[in-house]
Length: 81
View: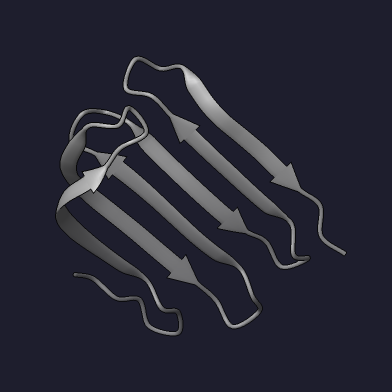
């Protein structure tokens, strides 16, 4: 696990979660946030799938899920204030 001074950033490993392809695999999760409301969470699964959720300072949100074959399964954007 790693931490940044001034922010809450963590990198953690996990052993069994459902990836976007529905396989139960391990992987790595990265989370970071700042005092102004920006938050990110990126997950890399052992099978090659990836997910990300980014919340920006204005409240906008981007959510994305990518299958290990490269196909984008979900790409959502929500506008903030």
